[in-house]
Amino acid sequence: MKNVPTIRELLGRKEVLIGAGHYIPHYDYTGLIASAGFDFIFLDAEHGSRGIESLAACVNAANVYGVPVIARAMDKTQGDIEQLLDIGASGVMMPAVETVEDAELLVRSARFGPKGDRGWNGMIRWNDYSGNPTTIRDTDTSIFVAALIETPLGHENLDEILRVEGIDAVMPGPGDLAVKMGVPVGSPEADELVFTAYEKIVKAGKIAWSGGGRGAKGGVPHIAAGARMINGASDGYMFRWMRTEFEAYQSELRANGYLSA
Image 1 (cartoon, rainbow, N blue to C red):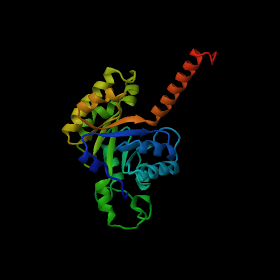
Image 2 (spheres, rainbow, N blue to C red):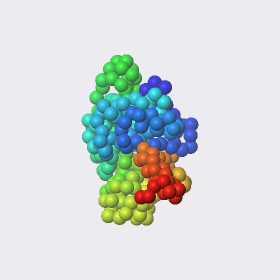
Image 3 (cartoon, rainbow, N blue to C red):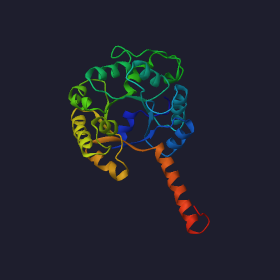
Image 4 (tube, one colour):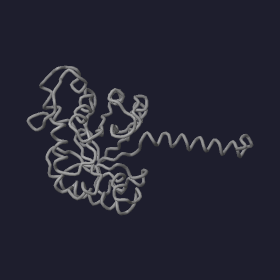
């Protein structure tokens, strides 16, 4: 997209990229997040209420502020991945990558031929409606492709997955991993796999991406372990802050005798 830096360009300028998780897909929220100064927005098309029109509006709102969007696909299908790239996402993430076959499907879906199998239509958002076929090579170079490893099987196959060419970044997701292991989110058992994965990802020459460290101080160990991208906050934090402010107002008014309950 015009006037929107690629993720690779940003990685060339900064030691660490701080992104925001965007789970409530409305363009006004996107504008709030983008205007805060985050390096990128992680737009979730897997969970919550989302249609392709609302996701497209979110991408457009982020691009107004010059902020690139990496979108997590709803499912492990070529159609889902292509559609997110067609609406102008600067990158795409496949959820629950567990095998080499999953990783290869991700690359094929995100890249044009001959490296991939992505369908071409030049008269839509990703190509600035130009119809210019010469942008294909530039697009293949600029699109950021990420794999989310969030199951025990994915971690078992991580070494083989990392050998797949065309994947730029890998996120070892702690949440679903813990759930599938049957342990609490944030447990040492799941976190140990996450931190072991960082070492492997960096050694393989890929970008290690952290889903977040449960607060700014909690994020530092993830960066120290090799992560160069981190989801530093999310729109959920905005509503958590609002709730905290509401409760603080209630408490203060009660203390001054203006509220009885």
